[in-house]
Length: 73
Image: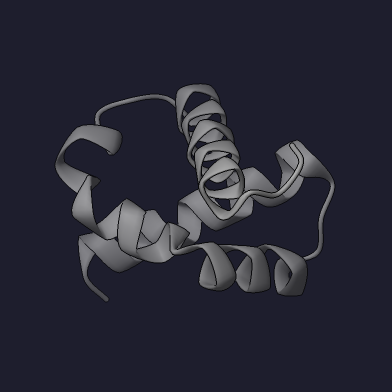
């Protein structure tokens, strides 16, 4: 398993606990909103930060995606 894949799983597990979601809910949320691609694209930066920063960064990313789609945040 690549380091990027391991890191993506770490991000999913961390976000799952942070938001009290199931693994399925996180997977669907990440897939629907392009979070997997975001994590892969910014792996070099994100993997040097802590889990709290990553969780907040994913929240900001999701909020940006919602506002771009015209959804309420």
